[in-house]
Image (cartoon, rainbow, N blue to C red; front, side, top):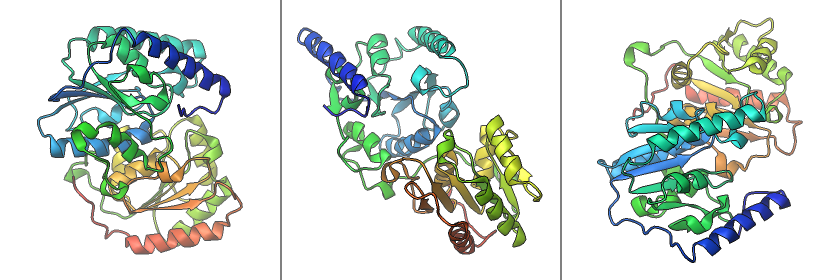
Amino acid sequence: MKYFRKNPIARLRLRCIDFLWHLRMFFESPKSLPEKINHILIANPAHMGDAVITTALLRELKDRHPDLIIDILCGSWSAPIFEGHPAVRQVFTLDLPKLNRNPISAKAKLQIFFIGLQQLRTKLPGQGFDLVASIYAYEPSYIPQIRNLLNDVPIVGFSSAGYGPVLSQAFNTAEVDWHEVQHQANILQSLLGAPKESQQYQAWLGHSSSKDIVQKPYVVLHPGTGNPAKEWSVDGWHLLAKELIGKNIPVKITGSGAREKELAQKISADLVIENLVDQLTFSEFCQCIEHASFLVCSESLAAHIASAYSVPTLVLALGKTNLNRWRPLGNKTHIIDMRFSQTIEVREVLEKAQKMINEASLGGRQHDHN
């Protein structure tokens, strides 16, 4: 069995769990898949960038099955992606402690989890789900909670997340070099068929109303990420911003949290930049990116949002991410791979950014409407 855990103790724990469930399932078979699926729960506890990728599947599902009722189970951090989404009826949340990035104690994270689990005990049963699709290939996933709360509903999902024996249909694509959207789509093949090429999927986020559209061209810089190890140097960002401003290109900088606010202040020192860190709601953040002429960012949510709006984007990749699996959807993104050599010259970034800005024709880009 292939698990996405490097720690041998963690892998052994998952093997033991699967072995015990395998013994139990000698006496209790997994639920059979339904012939007709009218109501599905899609479960993905991951963070917001992954959730944006999942919206591409919502588009596919609604295109093929307009009457399908879709509910979502996700972390509270990803709920803004799905709340009010035209394809989603209802959003349920459960924050798994290991995935909770809030700067709080482990005890507080456990308390949040158990409170959320208790709330789900009263909300999920009786919803009338025909199928639950657990589309997160990693551990921890929602599979054990779903099994406990909805033991009469068939579950399809990744055995690489553990608990494979309880799944009505188990998939393990750990050795397949696919984009994340293809891995997720594979779980839903009973509704979508075999996965398509990754470039054929398009993320689906709402558009702001026409009265909110900003006509003046501008570039967005989004230097922060959830992991500081993925971030480019302050000096690099400062020089990039200075170069853009020197060409009379308005610059906005976005982000959230105290650390990213401090980062933005350092980058914008002595420069005329519109600092929007911690100033935007999620909807306003999306709108800011949607109407940008160009985006430069680290590996972060911003790149995935830009992909949904076909905004030309330059991603500076410094982490250990599998870029083939997690790159933004669409063909408007260029990635400068700094993962193995963080000595990339600032000039190289500036030249690539300038080329893409010229191609974007500031102010003249037409937005794709969903």
